[in-house]
Length: 323
Ligand SMILES: Nc1nc2c(ncn2[C@@H]2O[C@H](COP(=O)(O)OP(=O)(O)OP(=O)(O)O)[C@@H](O)[C@H]2O)c(=O)[nH]1
Ligand SMILES: [Mg+2]
Image (cartoon, rainbow, N blue to C red; front, side, top):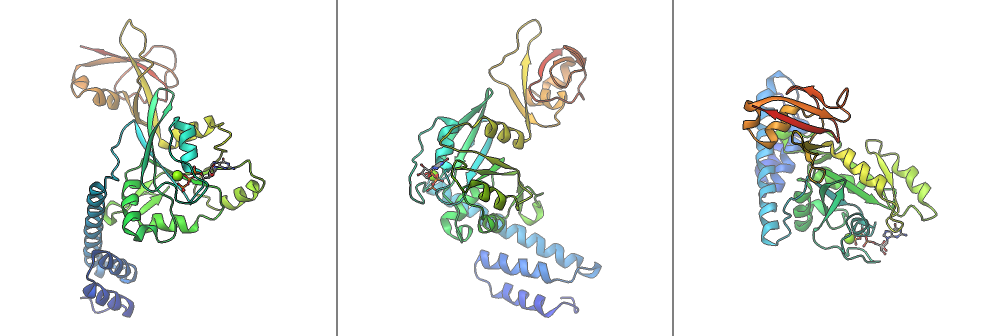
């Protein structure tokens, strides 16, 4: 042990050796990491703490996931992406999903109507997106056994919606942080933290005090806010925003001489190239590739002939020419 550590660090280390559960170990390691002097001489020590932290966190995650499976709250991914619908109790999460997906999730005028993860599929312009509601988030959520399971499902999301009708989200955001989910921030693989895009959806905006609620929500400046009313069902804007925040592009393929297949677009990450697309379809495609023709926003003119490193845009139509 380095001689020049602080008393706080020494206390944290003592806590670590006393800790009997993995959760306690993580807590102590976090304190150690926060209090260890940051200079060249402690580099190795800091690395060791990080490694231990990520190992314990991964273990906790795995156990939560296993438990979740046992209680069949696990969610099988489907569709082009998974959107997690979260928020405080009774904010209208289930109502909103029903309006977006045409599903029939239970809606109730009381809190905690939804008790386990519920799944529905939303269609957005030929793309299917999975929507998952996890039970309402309240203080202490991420330290309870159930809440931890739900958070481990949230960790797999491509986008997290915070559906709210109230302005104060401090507690809710704290629960995400405690579950090592960083909304609209970069993750830290070594530390077991995942970064996931987040979007605030202010619901029930037809109610009289909704402008005041909006003012309150604006202080969470790292989030975009979409204002909706689930019962009025004008949700096209929300659908668009969901798609935009997923950071995907949908690409329609066509065979030479035929019309484009407009029913099942490929979905790729924003910034993807023809090469990414070809690889996505089949590994062999790159080897046999001659050129592609592109229609749409990324093309300078219709049917532009392009190579493998051409960057695609949302709604492009692509024709691959092979050897
Ligand atoms: N005024 C108003 N009420 C709404 C709106 N959307 C939902 N509600 C009502 O809010 C209550 C809760 O709706 P739910 O959809 O069950 O809300 P939830 O967030 O899924 O609730 P929990 O699962 O219990 O956390 C119900 O009484 C709904 O009718 C809305 O846009 N405006
Ligand atoms: Mg619900």
